[in-house]
Length: 192
Image 1 (tube, rainbow, N blue to C red):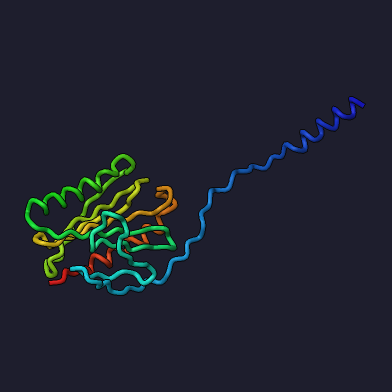
Image 2: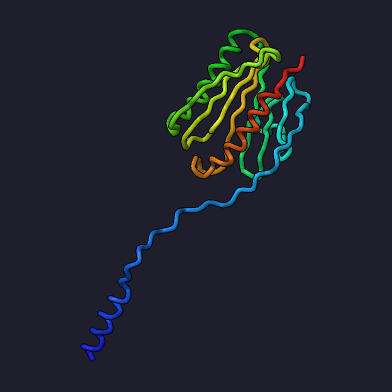
């Protein structure tokens, strides 16, 4: 009986040793359905206008410290938000402080970012100037910019997604929303 059980175990061992080479399947992600690009104008009592996507929702910032022209452009289908905060510039000292805060705010992500690139925004015909920060890596914010006329208006924008910051999984959505941000910047105008 012991001989038969031992022979059966050896046969099962050899049957279990197959020469096929198995490898694990790569990790997959959910399929993302992107809406068709279409834009509408934001013109709601603030000293600026811009185009934003029709599939996004614009709402005034409801934080306790929020000022009147602080708005959020929400992307509910992607769990992301563009936070826009407007400041009225009163003098050169306050302007320099706002620009330095934008720089500090972008470079605060250095701990998690693999790189941070800054590009100039320059539309002299509309008096729209600024800097666009592209933040690569697993940082909390992947894109930020500020716009100004360098005399009395200043607007800062930050893009955040409300999930774990993993660039490999968010990259398609990030590319999609960055195109919307480009349209927003190209269409941006200060009201007189």
